[in-house]
Length: 292
Image (tube, rainbow, N blue to C red):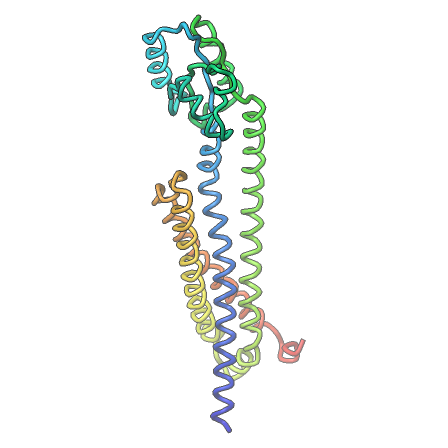
């Protein structure tokens, strides 16, 4: 009979530890994923900004030497990430592929123009920079027109500022929630042993002696929970890198390593602090207060 009771108590204890580890692991995993988002927020914003294209349409009378010189000068400019020459024949093939039919059969001619597509570096994708580039190039006689989506650039820059602000707010909020959730899990685990704590205290054990095993066990659970969270973060990071290789998420090993170490240490610190506070609270309670 005693053996069955001991097994029941052991299963109950393991279940309690398991729930604490899962709680810590899930909270740290969500916090770590948010950390990955914060670290890569600028890279993501830069990636979308660098998709904005400035198209320079050239006159049919433009000389090849002039076009080559313009393309080289644009490619060497500080604001340029890539400058690509697109002939009218290539442009016709792109349009044909997009609409799914040969529009030149109806028109009998190719109305498109030779052009140069400029992809800017992210820091230069602003309306002021684009206006300056347009003004600088407009005085060339063989350039017929310069087009870019002015409204898209303005909306994108405004949205990037808003998203950056809210990501920081969410980071602070999730950090607070992580601390509160882990603290609640630890307090519940300590609460279930409040009578043991008081019994040890009544037989003369010091507060430090009573607190030590609880702190060590909680730190062990925090380490396991942190490892579970890090494994989950590793899987997510690997999946995102394979799915979106253009973002180069693994090209910042120091920052990512720092985040992983930070999440690991955070799991240890929160469990240690929560256990210390919880045990201290029950150590300071009177015996009759343990029932409330």
